[in-house]
Amino acid sequence: MMKIGVLALQGAVREHVKGLEAPDTEVIIVKRPEQLEEIDGLVFPGGESTTMRRLVEKYQFFEPLQAFAKAGKPVFGTCAGLILMATDVVGEPGGHLELMDMTVQRNAFGRQRESFETRLSIRGVADDAEAVFIRAPLITEVGQNVEVLAEYNDEIVVARQDHLLSCSFHPELTNDRRFHQYFVQMVREAQAAVNV
Amino acid sequence: MAERGTDRIKRGMAEMQKGGVIMDVVNGEQAKIAEEAGAVAVMALERVPSDIRAAGGVARMADPTIVQEVMEAVSIPVMAKARIGHIVEARVLESLGADYIDESEVLTPADDVYHMDKTEYTVPFVCGARDLGEAARRIGEGASMLRTKGEPGTGNIVEAVRHMRLIQSQIRKVIGLSKDELMTEAKNLGAPYELLLQIREEGRLPVVNFAAGGIATPADAALMMQLGADGVFVGSGIFKSEYPDKFARAIVEATTHYEDYELIAKLSKGLGTAMTGMDISQLEGFDRMQDRSQ
Image (cartoon, rainbow over all chains, first blue to last red; front, side, top):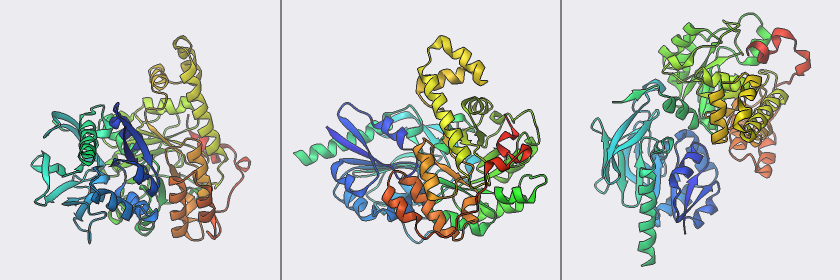
């Protein structure tokens, strides 16, 4: 049985739990750093990135989260979660957790009235994945080790760097579970690699 | 190909605010303090509810200058209030780029019978409710988020508690009803039947429900979370307290860790004076903001 956690400091937690459900997977709500020790993969949910950032620091999650990713355990960030993972944020002195080699721009599409939904082709996932963009960020630049999995209007919206995955929209707001299951498979593979 | 203003986008925006605190602010400086403290959004107002009470007269949409000042000051979402039924105030706020509109009983209603048809807008709306009937009517009109009405500007939590408990208990009742009992319940509540059917099937409201109206301390915020709120609005409580910055941070943390009593004890220490409270029984007629709409 694998255990996948959803970081539950703020934001859309319940929706991710639903998306991650699989016969061999137990989903755990993570509120404290010590819980990271018992899980094999982690989701950073959508929410308000400034709020989550503050709570990550306040509750001594910062270093444990970096160590978790460094240990090769898969991490999946959606929207605000993507912002937490980037090494650089446009207009800000640095990134936050700086897990993935990429630059992101917050609120890249504008205010709430510019929020939209569409279907996207995500490499390795689906040609028609449902994607809900809410005050979404964009990935403006990626490093050499980062693979671009999807673009929208020639802008990067899904990227993967080895065991790290991030997207600028909210797969958790749809009933389309294919993207979540892609991540569940990443966790499975990471676990198999450890057990070999 | 890309669609805007769908239910999923409007309701989804509120989903992202879950577990968070939305703070009332009257200028850019307060908005920055709120953002720095970890607020998930701010509500841009001309006056906080307790000052609206004190000032009396007709309370209207804020001066657009204030809304714009707040939007420029912070990167978190900015909400603004329109009077109940005031289609033009809502359109004006939408055109300014407000991220959410509160069709609010805190302002003097422009229409004493009808609420707005909120399905017509790209911008999402939040509305107040005292019971499941009111909640369901507002969702039926297109509200993408709910909040308890409570009794704004009083610093007294009793009404918000009453409204949250009632809504939760009515949801539990609906879940337990058989289908043939549901139509009569719809009639009794004054709620759209299809919505009750959906609530019964899913076991919850189709939109998030925050607590609002009278939250004055970190413990109040944690109480509302325990009663089933998805998050909290704090109006007059923060910037009417002695140390707004400290107070705001304490409320955010108490909302995240609402079951950690040792932490809440620590957060509650040395916060200075909270806003002055008010006994609800002193309020009569039009001063009871929660009774201004049905």
